[in-house]
Image: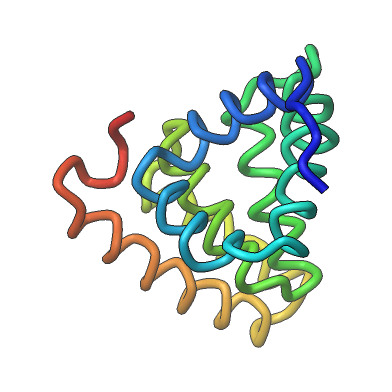
Length: 138
């Protein structure tokens, strides 16, 4: 079903592109959202998550990204953690700050979860360092 894109979708798409970056959005479009089921999910996420939730006043995008990194680690959502670590780096958190935040969590969510999160972080940070703009550009 191909519906017209509304204001929430447009706002959400802009926020998502700012958070993830054009290159990553393009890769996801070709590898994740390239079928009707996932396209529908992506449309919903743009509206409900990025258009409404991430666009709310009260917290900046940098803080929201760190909250996602912490929650992904706590619930063992490794693919989502990779996305949110990229967002957190693009919003200004350094590799050292994010690694320290993850390490701090070991006393609260346990070493196995933090170990896995740091492995994900190591991979994401290396990928971003390998991109022409360090993964931090528009």
